[in-house]
Amino acid sequence: MRMMLKVSIPVEEGNAAVRKGVLGSTIERILKDMKPEAAYFAEDNGMRTGFIFFDMKDSSQLPGIAEPWFLAFNAVLTVRPAMTPKDLEKAEDDIEKAVKAYGRPF
Image 1 (cartoon, rainbow, N blue to C red):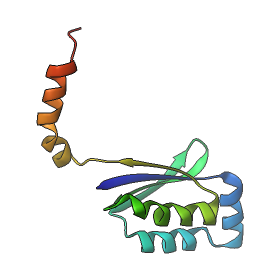
Image 2 (cartoon, rainbow, N blue to C red):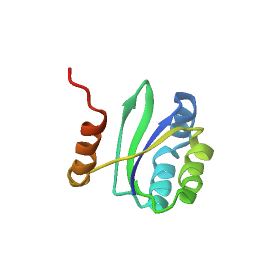
Image 3 (tube, rainbow, N blue to C red):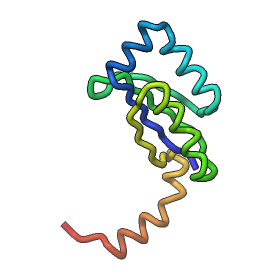
Image 4 (cartoon, helix red, strand yellow):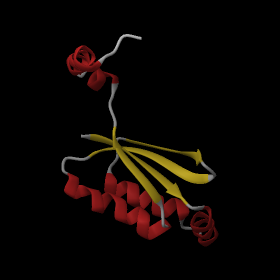
């Protein structure tokens, strides 16, 4: 299942990694092991943040995905399923069923 991992690196830990010259190389090593579909980096809530999209075949993979970020950066993580437009298209029948069963007129 395609998942989105949001990795937020606290400022203190991120600054320490930058000063040691290991922020980029550590992130590269973690991503090399993860083999994500895509990875984007930005600021979010004042922290260095990565938005990483990857395939998770089994929930038992989660510790192997999360622990490197926890250990290297004391990172705050959020993991959630993510869909492509094709995935959303496949869900149309289920959405329609939910509307018929639970939708209320406004």
